[in-house]
Length: 417
Image (cartoon, rainbow, N blue to C red; front, side, top):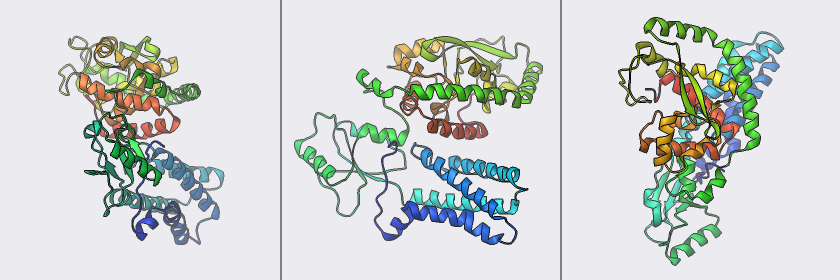
């Protein structure tokens, strides 16, 4: 279980709202029953069947994505349900006849209302309440607002509040015997007891590296089977996207050429899979005669051209890396490859930095969609924690989540320089 905390309902209405069957019934009511009743005389039952399959598929994927942190907002769930609803409407029109757009629109509106209700429940009712044991590194624990915390002063749970889990530094040397007995008793009473790193990882999406021992690296090995499957998916997706995006590629190349002199495609040595160097392809976004660092040091870098500022903001400059994906140098999703100079610098100053090369680098990644651009040592240390989380939970579902978050990043320009 990646996101281990679940709110224990205290009241009857909380039990009803948090019960999976009740939530499923509400989803069916909003997205199926009400639209079918509204268009009862106009809609064939086959449209209702397709809408039901769209709901089932959406809920299946949604439930898997929600196991990861930063996945419970509408920015992830609404695009997912919208995409599947559009596919359902198009599939029903191909299989039978032209879809009833009024029914599909009302069905989508209904599931959107249900998602808004689920968002309200997440924020108002379902936030877990964690009790913190005040020893060891517990003071360094940083949690996001998805959890409420209470620091215990004595080895006793409060009488006026239901706790969902206990969090302790189980490796602490100064944990008194009385508190150890208290933790054991809580575990016997079916109250979950977590080590602080597990809770921090589940809520922040980062694997702490400050206290990572080399013996623990074995737990971060990615699935070899999924690596092979992912390579096939990358190749097929690149073959489909290259012709589809060719108008964008040609237009961008033309604008770069007329905006400033120099080559349209910029090549740079990067460190990739298993530490092997390769040439990454990007649309040139800087003046070719400008000198400076091998990275963008600030948002207002004067070397960036007018067109370069636009294509960087919306990640259009990364599109030539589809060729890197076809060649096998890169994947669509993975840790961003660093230049040779930066990689050498980070390897010296950032512990375990080279371990991120155990998977293929990506055009987008878990660190990019959550942290944005980072070059300094402290920023890279945080970026490496995101990369380790990705490697540890290397899976199709995490990649799907990153794809949806990447689309949001492209739309908002988050983290661009």
